[in-house]
Image (cartoon, rainbow over all chains, first blue to last red; front, side):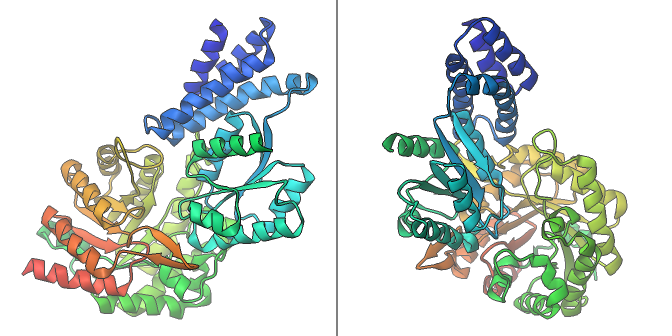
Length: 212
Length: 296
């Protein structure tokens, strides 16, 4: 499918208008929505993610590719809702209270959306109860916590404790990420996974969704 | 004092100071608080830290103004205190160092991605730097440090703004690099060679790297700067990368460990050496001894 290949390429080249136009064309051509999503947009972001992981491209290219992907998603979204095509999972993400760093979290958000997740991004400096309340309100499958400062890592423990207190910890999976963190810390606080980068976050999230 | 750039031109090696953030956390700064607000609330702490560094032998002491841009302060609803925060940051350091060392005003990135990658307008960011540099200038500074930059466009914007409103103040511009299989790059994808070219073109007087790495990687970064830079080079290394052991934050590179590798920086001909996150007065006094030995 020529148009799918073009969507793939234009996404990687960071061309939102082109991706939007090509997505509309693909729909008009009668191509299945899931095919456009999976083989065009998600596949495109997957290539971007891989190149980023291998340091062939960097953050600016990922950000532009993301804009292109979102442009395609905007076209698909209303039709997906109409046709009952849901995302593969819903995750609430944010940088924890006291921490304003958000580039890593934003990248994870891009990769997760790019993999077909519904991502609710609470931004940065987010208190523990806001994560929990939002996850409950939106019936999320997961919470993703980010911290760059070692001084704000303990807030992650508060989120886990609050989740336990509210009885949602098993139902809602919690993943963590950020430079000072580790699998050891995740285990220590009872998180379900530590993700070392955006692509790994997608792998962890998919694994946890499949295990549900 | 002998003008800063004259010292570098003569071939003098200058010693910067160590970390400020980690020192402030040890002195009561709480997670989530605006570090720069301490300039207003507890200037005595900033005076104390400056004194510790000057006593340890620093030739350059920097101000607690890294996040003093109005854009950064706005996050804490403190943008209307921009002038006072920056002025008091300079005053606290000057009170301790007088004319025994150069006073470097520290300026960091605005915290937002510039268009087209993010929403920050370059014009707005430039005006933010102006609003920060003016009070710093008024209070009296010797050097401007643009530190911990990862976006070359933002660094260039900062340098050009500084040079347009404070042409007489030397500008040092340092960026933070990550080691990858393909070499050292900032998260925005700037390589060291590109940084050297563009920072110099923008008008920087000194270029280099700070933060993000322990001393061993910094030596490798320094080698690259030496290869590509036509300007004097400034290197400020972390004391390793932080680890949490039993709930306690530790930076693992001791003064002795770092000082052994400072020798390599000196052998390379690096012009200004300092410390970043996790370093303290003990590191600086060890570096001082090493530099003095080297000069002999």
